Image 1 (cartoon, rainbow, N blue to C red):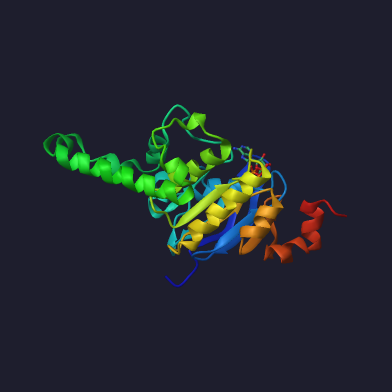
Image 2 (image 1 turned 45 degrees about the vertical axis):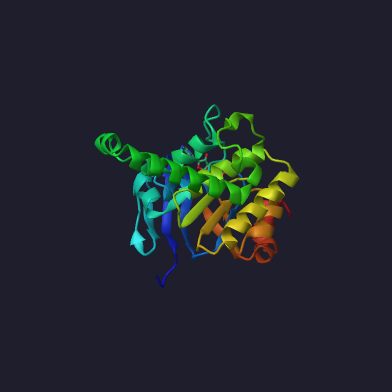
Length: 258
Ligand SMILES: Nc1ncnc2c1ncn2[C@@H]1O[C@H](COP(=O)(O)OP(=O)(O)OP(=O)(O)O)[C@@H](O)[C@H]1O
């Protein structure tokens, strides 16, 4: 692939009289970590929702790996290799770590009734392999968690829940991971640890790209290669964290300086 992994071309999203995304264009390269920042209501989550097929855009186009995916439904977007986490936890608290992760890739468990009845050994082998893969993935975040795959996630602290949500997103082997405010509800130290995990995931060198929406500027500064700043749905700045933080329009819109 020669072009960018992801491209938004003049994307517009209106909700009635509100323009949540206003002629928004951007690109993302393979293995890049991009920070998407801006004040409340500036269109960050809407860009994830448009990309993942929750909302069709009012105008413009979206391309992934050179293919147009504008308005594709969430399943097609997932199958193309784009996964996300949400601002609010979407874990099933009474279910185990293993079950919550496998919700992220049920295709591994669907072989069909006849196949399961005729080849029960095959089914068992598939279940064992799937379990091993889920455990290995969790172990890359926390050996401690990997030893407790049958524990209900409702009994775990927030940082462990966030790790499980990220594992659930990663179990399908995506090309692009969208993180929507991963630090929400966590302490400073927990956030620092989680960012170490995210940097480790990227360092594994499997070409994973990440877009992170985050209000904690320390997080953005530490883990992003590049940032885009939105204000009222419009891109007002783009560059390294240091470059955008020094931009006077950004300071006015976002950092609260005069
Ligand atoms: N489903 C919707 N219906 C109507 N308006 C919406 C909807 N979703 C978003 N909006 C509006 O679009 C604008 C952008 O919202 P969005 O949630 O994308 O902002 P954000 O930058 O993610 O904000 P925050 O940092 O608070 O999460 C806001 O004015 C919001 O009220």
